[in-house]
Each structure stands twice: as structure tokens, then as C-alpha cells.
Image (cartoon, rainbow, N blue to C red; front, side):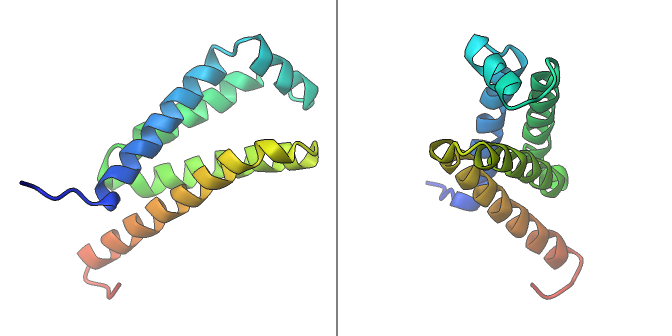
Amino acid sequence: MSKISWRQVLPFALAAFFVVGSLSNIFAPGSIYEEYLKWGYPRWFHFVTGSLELAAAILLLRAPSRLLGSVLGCSVMFAALATVIIHSEYGHAVPPLVVATLSLVVGWTSLRKQMMSMGHPA
């Protein structure tokens, strides 16, 4: 029986989160669309967010691009976090904070793995 570690599962779980998020933003039901407008973003901005989340998901799926995917995903989540904090919607701050933190963990483990494969001490 093979043993699967959290380091193997976490990038795929994050990718799944970003796929769901991207679809929610790209096809933006009225409530999501209205939130973007309420926050002062242009009418088309939900497409940008959804596209960036989809790109992060794709990059997270393969080890060579995982570091870049985690940086992109973390950036999108920090932007979401800043948006809800600026608009005093603190209850909405927890999910982007958690996902940003998990993205940092994936990025850190990916960076360490890349450095070790190049012969640098971890």
C-alpha cells in the first residue's frame, strides 16, 4: 500500500479550489457579479480574476510550474483579502487568508524541492 503525503495532495487540492473559483468568477452568477461592481471593479473584472485562478490551477498541477502557480494563486488570494478588508467585509476574509497560506506552503515546499534537486542544501 502506497503512502500519500500532504505534500503530494495539497497542490491538487489547491488546484481544485482554483478551478471551482475560476468557474464561479468566469460565469459569475448575479451575486458575484454584483459584488465586483459594489467593490468598484469594472464590469469585466470577474473574467480577469477567473482567468488568473484558472491559470494558477493549471500551473499547480505540474511540479515544474508549481512554484509559479503558488505565487500566482497567492497573489490572487492576497488581492481578494485586500478587497474584503478594505470594504470591511471581515467575515469574507477567512477563505482567501487560508488559501493564500496554503499557497505559500505549496510554494515553499516546491522551492525547497527545486533547490535540493539543484544540489543546494534545503
